Image (tube, rainbow, N blue to C red):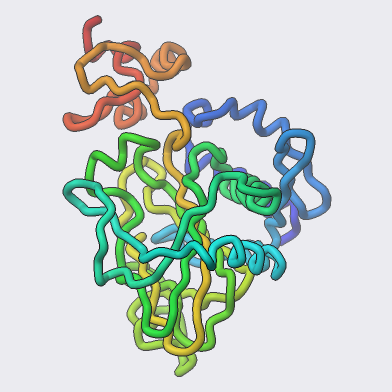
Length: 320
């Protein structure tokens, strides 16, 4: 497939993910206008410079869940730099409690890790911009990059990246996508495994794969590669096939970097309408309602019994 065809496919994929471009957290037309192509390289404008990614290095792994691998997303120098930023600041990894949403210790996750600051330095800022260019998701929707270290026997049992509690959805909503960057090779084990993936039975595996990896569709950690997968369906419902885990390291050690990306801005909390106030939470709501989006996309526009939508006033489901 030549680069122009692949770029067209990438744009179609973006439209498939966001059936309503105007509902994203940034002006789509202006954002797209700030793109340039150089051969097979697609570049996203960031300030006075352009952050680029090469779509010819991306391979689709699965449609259930939607998962893609980018070979050589990071250079060796970038991988080593991210490890150097983290290695003296590691703490035991935590998980989110399904009821309270609070971070707690758990034996299902035995790695250590730490969070970088957004745009902490030029390298981190460039990686974050490259992620936005590849995923077509704005930087402000992402959490800070988390660096993780797995020693012999350490793992993360299969889990979902979307939330089960409401507390963690107040800022940015659900995690829609995850970019997992491998910062080191692993001698044996440490694979990322998707136990519910539809393709798990069709993936051939020999003795070079761990027993854990044989329980689903698996990805071997290779230094510099990045794995992108989506936790939500295009209609914003949660995808149970996105269940994933990090297999125990059997030989060597594993370093990785995770970027979780939300459906809304993670930097700018939106006004809550939990009090019952009848308002729109986006200036485009009247236009979207006039275009029939209240009926086409009620989950976003109107909401559900447990969570208000963002255009309730324009959809006339409340009174001010």
